[in-house]
Length: 550
Image (tube, rainbow, N blue to C red; front, side, top):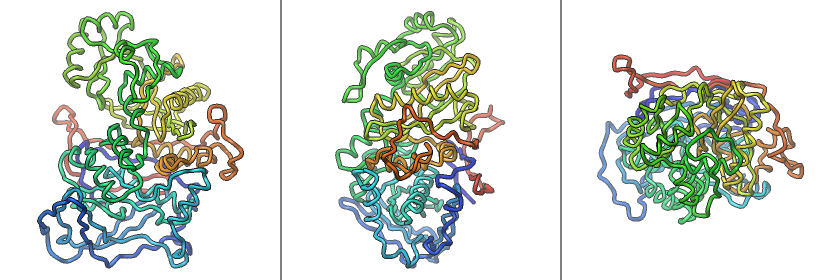
């Protein structure tokens, strides 16, 4: 498989993704009611959206059609997609111009042709206690995230509803994505060409995403991870135009995006925190997604003098962190007071304008995550967790689960604390509560709550057999967690007997009998001080199987 790599230049290989109930259920494409792949003879057409300006066509090659066949093996889901597309017909378009794909589509045999997918989905949502049918979905992401979302939701629809055409997916695609014949474009039902370049021009452009969502008449937007997934302006503006954001509400996302406010909210929910500049502070989340300003400021450090005073109370070694930092930026470790001033100024310069806080360094700590999902009815479930301790330059390299380094009773406390926090702030959707865990002392401390689905979520899917993108979709359709069949199976409950309620803060789920490891492939240049590097991956091939995929 040839694939162009840009940006961070990182690919992820995750062992054992299987969102379905059993492998034999996933491999049903050859059954009488299975999927049949065929090549569509329809040629691509461009639909001019209101207010759009048509760009000049730029022929790129000959007029003969080039056949392309792609096969995606994802935890037993085999989606064969083949098709033909003329290079000359792939014209440059502006953001609001839509091209309807004419590559191969997967469709039902004649036996299922009389089933109305819209009615089928409506019946399912109503039967499960939902209040909103989300069928047409804009995927506001690209690459692996977009591919994974489409495959997972289609897989869930096929296994749960017996149909593969329940959802209609609209993709966003840059010229680079189109030239690379990206898998997610071929999997989508429709794609909209968007400007190339930095992600602020495309996948992180909130106004553009909302414009496309409105023009295409979608029911919901799935943001994935990265890009605009943690921008509170996106759910806010989508709400204004009547489109569902598949994620948490804007006020909740806004406050969780700030590490200082998140720590204060965690302390309020009774989640243990490591000694830091905001020790003991408590506050409730306001309707505007903020905590009282005077309490927030007490948790910050604004000068070198304040940093020195805080360090004497917290104790060395300490970490100086910018609340708006991430990915290795805006974070420094300080061993002694004489190094405090230099490192404090460096953090200030790396993330200008960001509030800064300090916390004690937890020596020998493990990085443990708890996967949480909150619904619109005030419930929260913890879907086991992951150990992400093996890191390089503050970037995760290996993720594994369940986190066996943590005793089961301690990990249960971590899950309960994560659930309390989720419920207290009214979190809806999938998220990850991250902890620092001191194995020697058997103590854990709150680190942050990521208000999005993370790239390593397939580890959780294999552990729990819960399809995460599909669960996100169901929760945002108003379906209670107690009525989601895969969640009920995880707790050993009858998937259809909703009268047997799950008490999420009391009941224990069936502990997984499997272990999963995921690995990320990163590129560094050994001749240049092992600096991260980017470029083209000429060829990469994973020997994917039912229990291991890449």
